[in-house]
Length: 488
Ligand code: PLP
Image (tube, rainbow, N blue to C red; front, side, top):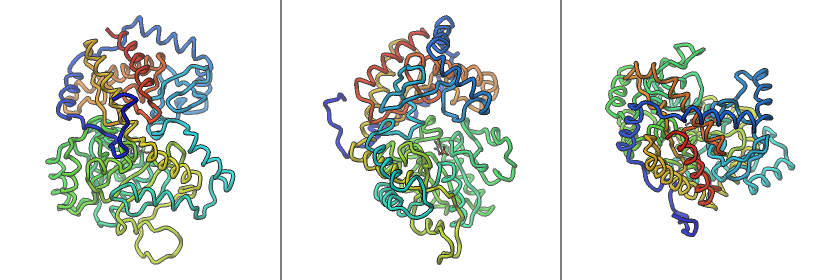
């Protein structure tokens, strides 16, 4: 597709679902091979870039290290060899405090589907801020407008309650599912990220790792959380059976693209089969659409797959990158258990709160971001940029004979060079021996991309946006090729 080919307004953000068996096979082949990092002499030049061109960032990073634990506050921020501090963000570009320019494929960790700092949204936000400031604690017109818009776009959502983050929304949705069903067990897919609430720090990143990261979390908090390996419907059915004898399953929660934003892509019919299992066992199906909501289509992943969850989690994309982004949507009957306020007719409710949630600032940003996304066909435009990026990267790695694996789900582009996230607890010796070197290789690749003017998500994922023109994608591909040539 080139710039002159218009994308129909009805086009989905995902033009083609990846062949999951083929991707699995390539990922397995990648982790069977020794790593293929940047050659040492070239890595020295990457370090030279950071040391000679990023002096202001380096000084800031060192000050940050004194006052901020680890010197960094975002798990997705790229921090090897040290974090770069950004000064400006516009559309597809970032500029750091030393004046270096980058093509931005982090896009704030995903939410800025229009590109960074969209001027139309920014203007509306400033107007609202001038009028009433960021929050009043009382109802604002934009709260209603945003809720109405979410209900209009997202097929399963009849009512919407805004919260402050994806993490909070997952907490609230699980509480709601338990209140509604009267059951306790919750099944998640191993490797999936659903925020950092006590009960969800379980089976994170690598499937089968259970409580490995649950430091500071008592066993009781994760007692009713279970994980199942990705795409393993038979194992989920077994769990549902066993849970039925122990009080029942309240919910199955999934990232519909697959765990860790599709790093282990779901089979195309997986979500529909989960829907059937939930119906059979009386559990609610929760789609965590923090990443997929609006990014893969205005109707989220549920619109793409044609599967109706009972509850949907929204997060960062909801407000186009502005703060306090989260929410729960779902069927009226279930959602009414979240009724807020003092008194009211509701006798039983699942308590959620948050003084600054649904404030005018977040709501005006959310409303106008969604309006602009629809108007500009942003999910499809960003998705086609993701397709172009994926095709280009695959052409380069194949031509250079590299084992790297590239595939995309629309504007979510996965670029696995070290395969660290694909290591498996079923091969514990390899896991223990290789997790650190493979992780370090991923850091080095990220640093090399950065030194070539490319910001990625942790060196292994790219979020494209509607600001990525064909020219920008082609320029980025040239830079990726320059990096990959440092390996061969
Ligand atoms: N769920 C998914 C799928 C996510 O990707 C994230 C964050 O990246 C969250 C939940 C947590 O959202 P937040 O960071 O807003 O708490």
